[in-house]
Amino acid sequence: MSTGPDRRILVVLPAWNEAQSLPAVLREIADHLPDVGVLVVNDGSADRTSAVARAHGVQVLDLPFNLGVGGAMRAGFRYALAEGYDVVVQVDADGQHDPREVPRIIECLARADIVIGARFADQGDYAVRGPRRWAMRVLAGVLSRLAGTRLTDTTSGFRAAGPRAIRLFAVHYPAEYLGDTIESLVIALRSGLTVEQVGVSMRERSAGRPSQRPIKAAIYLLRACLALGISLTRRREPSLAAPEPVA
Amino acid sequence: MKGYLFALAGALTTLAFMFELLRRRRLREKYAALWISLAFVVIVVGAFPGLLYRVANLVGISTPLNLVFFLGLLVLLVVSVQLSAEISSLEHEAQTLAEESALLRNRIERLERGPDAELSPLPPVADPGPCAADPT
Image: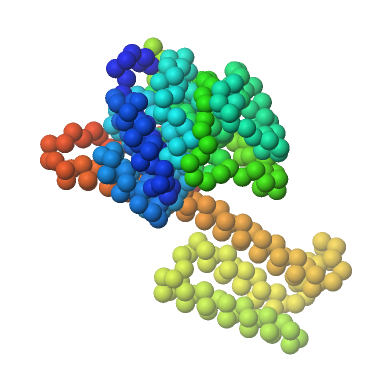
């Protein structure tokens, strides 16, 4: 794994109808991360997401219809693999992730294949209550044991992947509900990759709100546990990361 | 006796209908196979009603009609589950095609921008899904 400063870094923004918030995010990335490649994956948007991204001069992948974050990210990983990037950083296009945190996340990639920018690790003021919080606790507990390290925010979409993880995810990246967060971690851990987390501060989403209503939260809990249970009992994916010995 | 003739007529009609759909290539053989074999079963039972009584006796169902209903429901359940699985694999294929078309489109755009644009080799084809043959 190369850890030098010459690594090629790609920021991938899966975007579904984010024409409103995208310009601010892209401007921030250009200001704070001048040396990275930027790829907007337009996930079948009905608005001007694609045009806005093109106007900013970044690379764009236009998916013909909505695939969800999982499908958008797999396309991003495949692009990264083809173009020879060493690091993929997933950043939400809605502006809740601060690009200034990206260097800190990438720094941790020296020790792990995947680094999660965690919301609860004593930074920022992101608060979640009720069943949704319990769900996150349960998921974090199980995945922490699997990873052998403390993970507190397994559903965070703010994460970085190193070369081995890129090779794995370019082929196996689940498109199911919550697959892009929980199941992808399970697949990675089972393939022998390592996961770590870094505390980051998050901002309020500039558009849209996470659901906090009890019934919705309960459904979220059930679906999350189902997703976790199924992916844990699933047969191991044929490992892509294994054949290449880590020098 | 009328009831059995009715069933027989129904099964024969189904058979003819399936055959016609296959002939016009509206239906693929693997989906028609089940319905055709089902129609054959109904034809056999319609022609020899005694068979139904004997099978019902064998499995301990006192009303033969209930056996018919039970088996009918079972077949419908299996078919709908199989169709769900079939749809899932279609969705998987559609996803891969969507990603592929987006990646190719991006490539074409870069090629159009300049003939000497630097292009790397194409990425590997993604996960072919659970139904595809294992790569060796």
